[in-house]
Image (cartoon, rainbow, N blue to C red; front, side):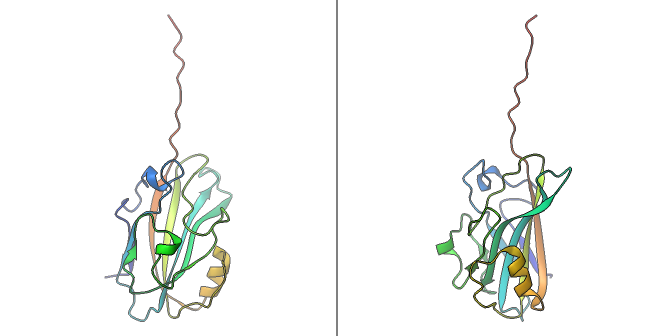
Length: 167
């Protein structure tokens, strides 16, 4: 078996339910992983959206979650995990909303992809403070044993009123 990440909330490539977005309860989805390499001493998770602000003309990658030093024996993250309920030793980075923790999808237009990237590392990382995604990626260089990926999609519900002229 290969190192893998999955969610009970959505199928690979499937729609992320609204309770995990800005239109819902803003919960983080449940995540689980399997076949973590035996040599792994820590895991890191980065969730980002490569389609910001518009999938038809993406201008940037928007980061939604940055975690590192997740214990390799942790089976995953429960739904709605909070900073205080993360597995012991897990450290938080800063998302592009400027916050620690889960930044829920809230795409301004179109259907966006949300890429959940899990990295198996050969050593725990030093305390990086509140790293951004680029800072975490720099710290991980030379330590990545394996990478697993899960993609979910989301498009905001738009309520369009149709005008029907009176006949």
